Each structure stands twice: as C-alpha cells, then as structure tokens.
View 1 (cartoon, rainbow, N blue to C red):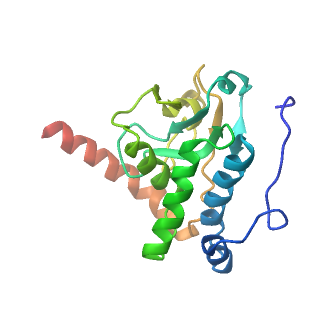
View 2 (spheres, helix red, strand yellow):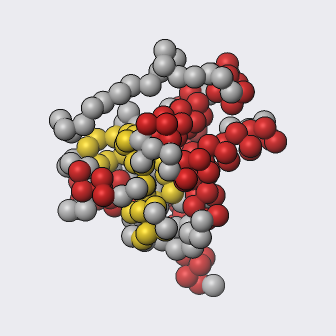
View 3 (cartoon, rainbow, N blue to C red):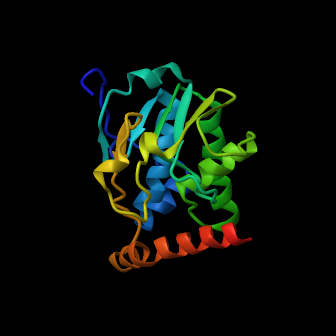
Length: 203
C-alpha cells in the first residue's frame, strides 16, 4: 500500500507504564501484549493496524470513509466472533477506549490476558451487536469474514476462498499457540465445528 506511511511498534516506542504491559512483557506473552499496543497506538494516533501475517490484496482506501472498521472472523457466533488482526479507526475512537478498558479491567480482576477477539466481541456486544453480516453499529463498520478472514483460523487456505470483496488474507500463524496445540486444532476442531452445526440442524 504505497500511499500509506508504515510505522512499526516495538519495545523502543511502546510505553510500559501500566501493569498489563509490564506483566505481559515479563511473561513473554507477546500476542497479548500486542493486543494492548495495537489498540493503544490507534487510539492515540489513528490509522490501520495489520498483523504481520496479513497479506494485502488490494487498496484499503475505500475503507477510510469509516470512523472505525473491523471484521468477523467466522459466521458462527462465539466469544471470538470479531477479530482485531485487521483494525482501522480514527484517533480517540470510543470502541478503542472500550477495548483498552476491558483489557486492563479483566487483567486487574482475573490476572488473565484475554484474547483480542474476545475483548472486541464483548465491547461490540455491549454496543448492541446481535447478528453476523455487513453492518453499521453506530459509527463502527463491521464486515463479513470474506473481507479480511476468507478462511478460518482452524482451516487451510484455498484460492477459491478469495472473492471480489476480499481486501486481505490473514494467514493465521498463531504465534500464541504451541506446535502441539496448532496440530491438535488443525486436526480436530473442524470436526467439532461440523458436529456442532449438524447438532443445531437436527435440533
């Protein structure tokens, strides 16, 4: 995306002035640390955040009309319904503040580093999110999975999953998971999802 300025955030320019950042850094929870850093950076400066395993297929310029945009990572509703591996927002956007508050409050009360998608989904449900699909939730624009996440995190990329609507491909490197867990998820989770869908059809 030649028309965009690219800025890298790392330990040299991240403010470790809060307990969440200090704790996640000390414990080597890099993906959890990045959940806070990405949201904080966008809250303070505005822009578009992309995970390092995102392959851009076309210009994000049409998305700049939105005050905030992000996408569902799957159609089926779960606690991780909406992802923040691709996230765009204007400086000081309220959803970003909601996510920052949730991240720090949940850590303060439970000692756990909650996943970014869990936090984003919770914040959006607090704003009225109820169903899957392309929609405007106040000044937040939500896109179906095909736009940013054309194949699921437990699946395998196939060229046919890319549509004319697809802006990018998130390749799900899953740096937060061990090799053993990655293997288990790739092998068994699709079967669980298929069984769950079949059960719902029968019921």
